[in-house]
Amino acid sequence: MREEKSKRANFVRSFYVNRLEDNRSNVNGRNDVDNDNGRLVEYSGLLLGLNMYEQLCSYENLLLAFKKARKGKTRKDYVIKFEKDLENNLNKLREELISQKYQPKPLKSFIIRDPKTRKISKSKFRDRVIHHALINIIGNLFEKSFIYDSYANQIGKGTLKAIERFNFFKGKVSRNFTRESYVLKADIRHYFEEVNHEILINILRGKAKNEQIIWLVNQILKNLSPIGGGGERYFTERNAVGQSHIAILC
Image (tube, rainbow, N blue to C red; front, side):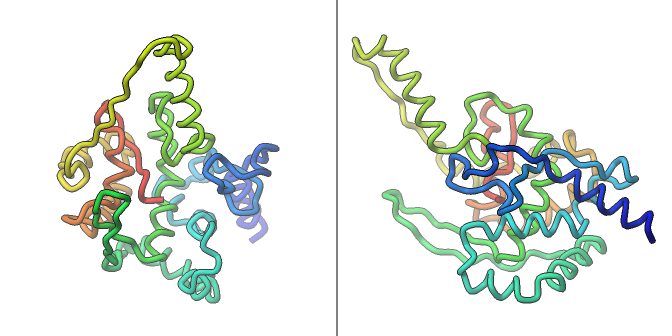
């Protein structure tokens, strides 16, 4: 029993690396891990004999995922309800993952105009916890291969950093604002709705190398299709430059 507790403590410690800069909000106005003042940077699960999927299913990982999913939404009714029976809810998710019986709940869809009219599909809170749990484990596999000027949903990046970088290039291209310059604003029509899932899964399989992880990703993607605007976005946000990420799952 003492040995098991020691292993559990080591596993939990491996989730966090204390950093002074984590005491403040990141560029998106969010702390990285609620009030833990730490950053999820590595996993020692493999040292404890746990494979990638077992790490994903661990209670510690699900608890961390809950904290991330809750961030900025602590007053929402669905968050309060989930947290009232937190341990039981997380254990239910854990059992569903371990038995591979997890099935995402139907999405809630609504229309926004900002100013373009778009259909947005929102996952249930319990499914967002799963999304974060997945990214906690596989996110680092992808993020380290991104180009520098990739700013969405990454620690230390975000909207403000992207604007700062844009201002840098604006000054460079215009030769310190001494000549006229142009900006191309472009979008790919129906990009997320038309992503080929077979190609996407093959890309993920080459990175994750764990069929249970691939099973979980497939469960998420099947729930989102053919609506789009959901889980494909993390995986496809950077496919235009031969990369992949998992942005909107978070």
